[in-house]
Length: 115
Image 1 (cartoon, helix red, strand yellow):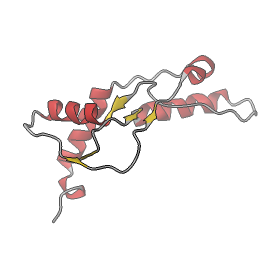
Image 2 (cartoon, helix red, strand yellow; image 1 turned 180 degrees about the horizontal axis):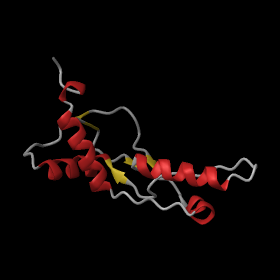
Image 3 (cartoon, one colour; image 1 turned 120 degrees about the horizontal axis):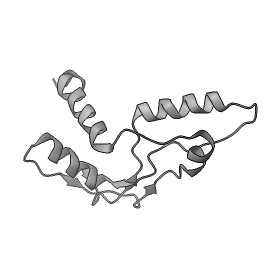
Image 4 (cartoon, helix red, strand yellow; image 1 turned 90 degrees about the vertical axis):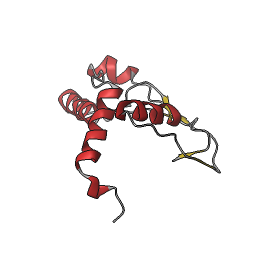
């Protein structure tokens, strides 16, 4: 189900990249409080994510659109500071992460199927 036209843009980052950024920040700790954005630095619309999932699963389905009462949002992290200070660079590509997620839910249907 996609609410609205699926135009919301989000930054998707793999948990392995988040863990790596956290470890880099811990190793860099110099006693000062510092803030770093951790993400992929790339934005994808909800509709784009749905289309990728459909393509990766090989299913012949169409997204169901339902009305939305919120404005379209855009959240994409600027990871420039994390890259320049920590050396953080996300490594896991979006499709690889989506395939892992698809496989996880395929292997664990009790987590999402109604009984």
